[in-house]
Amino acid sequence: MKSLNDIFTGVDHVLNSAKHGNFEEVLTKTKNYAEHATKKSAERLEISRKRIELLDSKTKLNKAYEAFGKLQYEAYVGEDVSEEDIQTKLQEIQLNKSRVDLLEVEVKNLHDAFVDSLRHDKKTEDDIDVKVEETE
Image (cartoon, rainbow, N blue to C red):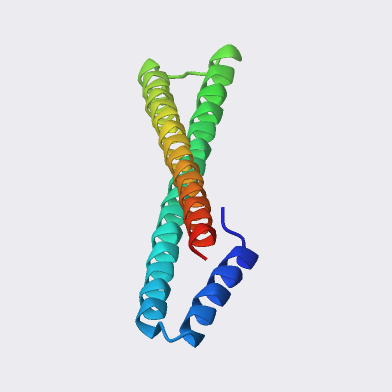
């Protein structure tokens, strides 16, 4: 992941290029940096949204477990508990558990893709830096 220092270094490089008369190149590079930063921010936002959705689903699952446990306890102590209520809670648990499992996979896949794209970006930057050094 790019640190703030890496971004400032890149901006310094762009500004130094501007001093040498390549203003169009500076504008292009600045635009590319802005587009890249926007894309990465959007990706991180999507991961955050999915994580919030996952937490919400886990909370719902825990509440369903709690309600099911309460019904089981009531049945254990001899209170009237309808089989329909128990089946409803079981279905709710199964539904929420499936949702949690699905969201965990989605979050992992989004996170892995984001990390891979950062590695690719870093490799591309390293390749560009080597090419620039070779031409200087």
